Image (cartoon, rainbow, N blue to C red):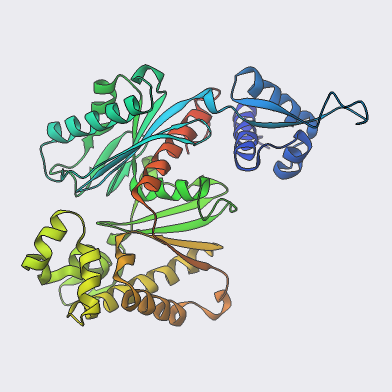
Length: 398
């Protein structure tokens, strides 16, 4: 009978212990053992190694000078915030947002640049991203030499392991090796990630899924994205591919497959209104959905598009819950700005489509996260890469 690779198991256990300290620290070794179901001997060995590597710090709880206190003071463990510093960025069609964080995920600086970059030449986009990263790092009182890793989140289909962006509304071209381009420019290891995966990890680290090991996130931005967290880890496709939820087939029509983006994508919702003077400037500035909400309140024709989109998303969520049965489904993105017509039709369609056996299994959570939070999610991706890389080059990819 084949046994597991001992080096791989040690890497998995070490990551498990470190992540437990991140989520629950300051925490004692006994509590770590209880939460990870590892033996106290194993936990002691792993935490000793983490202390030697400077990734965690001890905290003595209780007054060791008080002779009235019997026994040794309780020692708790927590992440060392100075163990690493990373940059996370959200790159959207009409804006870029960057944050610098420490190893604990605390934000040291942030920078928002309302610049339209979509469909620009790759060199121009790279110039703007480079300037944004450098400015945010300087604002944190650091230099690029102090930065251990950079992660940039893009809409579209991203192959995480190779750094290729297979397709994105940001680029004119396909299969863009943007990670290599930025690593060379910045002389710092740079990875790319789908914005949906970044915000998923952001919610796991700091937001509405911090208490969960499994969850699903659906992003309703310029593209429709999906993030699946299982056992505290992102589920990726072959080659580390992200999931383009907009390509999901809802059925067949006279012209072939009917895909989700044709019913619930931003372009489908705005439709012919995109050429309207009321919309043109708002869309150009990335505020199309917010402007649409104002028109819906005025009984504009957009209400029908919002209802149709909500129904399509509700059916999609029901299918995802049928497949994965996650305890929580988090919805984020600009489409939430459409308001009651969209949200009510989504909830109604979901309630009708979910199998009776799964009713009440998954909680639907709607979150209007700021761009800063999306960038923090990208920083969390960079931190997870650092969690693994010091001790295992063969361990499982995040």
